[in-house]
Length: 66
Image (cartoon, rainbow, N blue to C red; front, top):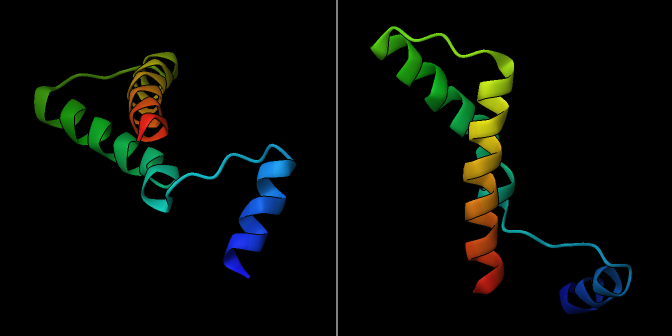
């Protein structure tokens, strides 16, 4: 059943990612907050989004290669 479901999703062009990657964005933003608090920085939303995009893109590309 699992493989059948994967085949259907693949035919529809749905990208399947490991849950640890898909859920890591919130964890990363929490880490960014911690770093800011420790170092006395205050990032604006655009900076947080840029950093998040950089790390998520890098991690996603590595997973997609594997």
